[in-house]
Amino acid sequence: MALAFPKTNAVVLAPIGAVGLFWAWFVVSPKRAFWIGWLAGTAFFTLSYWWFGETAGALIAPFGFLLTLGPAIGDAFFGFALVGALVAFAAHGLTRRTRSVRALVPLGGAAAFAAGEWLRSEGLGQLAVPFANLGYTQVSSPLAPVAAFAGAYGITFLLCVIAAYAAYAIRMRAVRGSGVDAALALFGVVVCIALAWTFWPARALDTPAYRVAAIQGNIPQKLKFTKAAFFAALERYESLTAQAASDRPSLIVWPETVIPAALNRSPELQARFAGLARAIHAELVVGTLWNSPDGPYNVLYFFRPDGGLDAVYRKRQLVPFAEHLPFAALLSRIPWASEVSHFASGSSDGVVDVDGVRFGPIICWESAFTDLVVGDVRDGAGALIVATDDAWFGVTAGPYQHAQIAQMRALETGRWIVRAASTGISGLIAPNGRFTRATALDEQAVVTGVIGPPVDTAYDAIGGNAVALGFVLVYVCVVAWSRRRGA
Image (cartoon, rainbow, N blue to C red; front, side, top):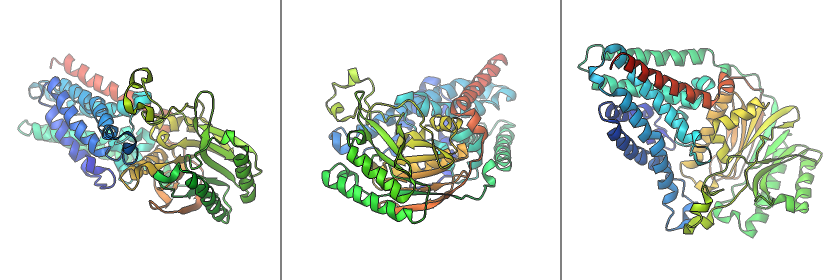
């Protein structure tokens, strides 16, 4: 399963890897399935999250390994251990059940897995770790159109339907009809994919004509917060912005916190950026900081072409144990806790109208929370801005996984995305999930191009929470049906 993600990108292994889990869960007790799931999940998430501590790990040495192992153990508990127990509970006495009951058990198992993925990714709120979702691996596969209707969790569900029924066919190979049940399930998945493709609103896109640009200054993380790097970043981003202006974009986006100073406390810097916006005749979006009595905010400043200030967007979804310390009263006694920042969180989406297009701003980690992004769309965002600082993760799998998540948000919402990353991957993403422009890692780059109008998707109206609730209901119905039939 871990090999399905970047950088390996062996996407066909996503359901194949899950077969082993369901094969084990179907024939053991819920207690044993719980421990199998926790062990397997810890291995999977440790492999998937190994890049978390690429730079930050050195800040809390010798506890740097906890940046990977801690989230891995937690996500394994909610995403694999609890799911395993639920699957085993639904499958209890599988070989003795009637065919009408037996054939539905894998469906309930797939629903439980998808619901567990939502729980660990978003359902835990500020403690959620929304990475390593199986659905993300399929942004360029035939399953991609499903995202416009059921999101990443819907794709995970279909992958697990394939896996669960394959495991069922192996386990029940001596039972008449089990192969037919598995074949029917696979046929159902194919039908779902075909229907999604047929009615996919992003199959045909209007010709894009709105010019935008993203700047990638490529300041290494180990230098970013030094005084010399601060002035180098100013000069570099101003120079690259002037270069981008030759293409006459209406919007130019800088990455997250490329100016690591409290801009509200520096009238000189504000005047400098306002003057730059006037000079380039474009809306300039600057990633920086904002100091307040509540603590610092991670923000995006929107400077109008006339030099005025359109808006200041404050990041809403903070990174636990990086931007804020959960359970601070308890955990602040731990030695390395002093290294954790104490940012304040914003409370509004900050959708901004830029020359007739309403943009929803998203900062870094927020792009992994599907309902936060869908909320911007519901509030009128016709396109999205993702400003991120992936320099923390060097050239590991991290920047690739994070870019893949942005592709999924485009698929789900039917919106174009302008993505500016400090060291990559920056680019423009179409509503079909494909990059129309993209940079490599570790290079200075200017991305210029055009984006177009949005296409509305069913997922915009449904959202991830409702999809997850649907999976819970599927699982409950399968269990209730099996009990009613006396299994």
